[in-house]
Length: 423
Ligand code: SF4
Image (cartoon, rainbow, N blue to C red; front, side, top):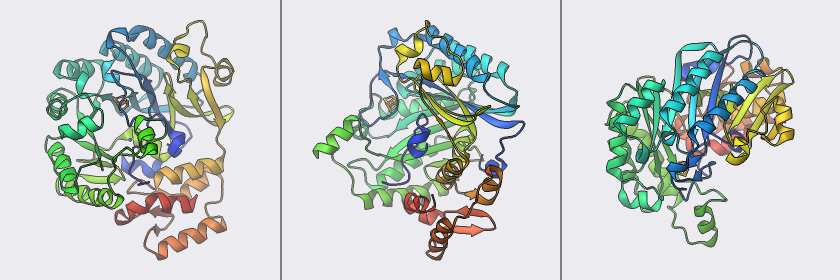
């Protein structure tokens, strides 16, 4: 699999998994940075490639306020378990399709969150938006609610490919959504693109990326289409009925998109992410650095340092269960017993180091393995890792400067394999 697939915002463990100058600033002490991820689990339809927790719903039946009330109760319970002082650096409302959620509910949620934690002066608040539920009025309402960054799922500017991907918006609607966001008070606008789709030449992938870049977006995420088990595409691939692009065409697209976006002034700061003017995705950088984040909502993942140590948890993926007000939210361990938390696992120091390597090496800035190991109290260089690193360095696939490791962009196509060798 190529290393530039979309890392699921809701499934950190699946990849064990969005400002690069903060890479070496990771701490878990007083005033450590905190992110909050809120999952909104509904969409108008299910895309055939999607393996996120997203359930099709008639928008008229979305329980806007009931869901908000449960997230607020969960916020109180989870916040009680955050130890020490935390500085809220980012809030990310993902899904699903959060642009379907009543902006007034989002506003109340954000008010409660910022009341609960001291905020970074540059607090980033992102909402994922689908072009089919986002226009100028929605942009204005989200800005009023406190959202200062949107991530718009444009995915493609070609009708045929949008149809293949099961999207229900047109290329013009994708561009109109981006323009509506850019014309609003929302300061930062990101667009998602999927490339490496059947029928798409590298030149076509470049043309789409450049067209979106020239709208004025500050950030672009470009992911290759990946086929996941449990999706409609996964089933078709298994039967051999899903047309796919050859790997070398996808690799060519990756290299050409990288070069074209560099010409447009974008920094390729993470394998699948590009930023202009330093507008990195602070929330995702928190994931990639292994920072703590509170996960709220059905199906949300979270990683916290609690009185019991560092833990990862995943909330029940069932909205019905999550919305059941007869079951109160409490400590994580109790919620695990009650079924509100589906998974709860301790993360030991060795695992934490491996996860930070796994994710941090996706960043252009790489990782300071010496600082990470010292912070976690583990050995950075067991013999096998040292040998593997020396082999990779000799082949030009890894750079080591002082205690910082980076994968040169020219070697990103091999990043998965490089990272696996170091774990
Ligand atoms: S809109 Fe996004 S979250 Fe919803 S089904 Fe499609 S890809 Fe999944």
